[in-house]
Image (cartoon, rainbow, N blue to C red):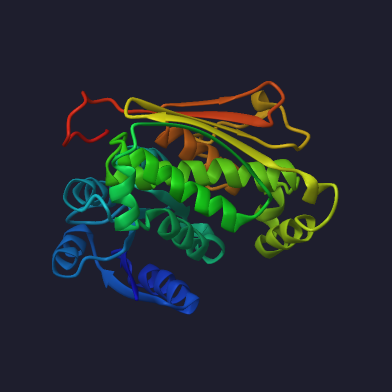
Length: 304
């Protein structure tokens, strides 16, 4: 069973997060009261994923993220962010966290975020051995608006990047999160024209409308094109949808404190944090993501 460790010094918040995760089923939930307690428990029983608060005594969330990145790079970390923790949250994402959920949106977003991060953190060992023999790859995919297909493609691209030593295990997860956000955005916001503003009002209505439109022309006829050029030096991902597009210059800054808690800016923040470049075309229906390896080529190098 998948093991999830929830870290928070507040008993109330631990119980809230733990109850949400437990009700999702098929997840073995454990708890720690601060960062040091979490590291002690991780040493005894390695979890598949850690969900942590930021502001804690003894060892806070930022220090915990750094420690897990250094000692257990294959264990992804999701932050629970509270009001006033915006700058620390962004720093933790840059340091090694895989995603975040504002505490005011735990009920709506925590389980979905856990499932998304677990999906991109899964690594098939046999496939990983094969992908390490890959030297360079240029591919193009054309996808229907199908989340299962999107997740399969994300895993394929993660394996290619990790196999060519473009990034280490921790960055493999973060790369996958950024790609997942970009391609899901192309599907939901681009082809299906489902606005993030609806998700802020009604979480279930957002997904219900997407499911309905995925089977309804003209939305169902639109495709997502993903063009990829990847080597041990860098990877370039170009993701294009067939929707009406938008004005990229009208997007609010997701790093601004008043926007950090909004679902509409979360994907862009994760893309900008985990990738070296994020560029939109003028029409707003194509995004280019660039990920570079910053260290000299060697057999045991890691990307930072």
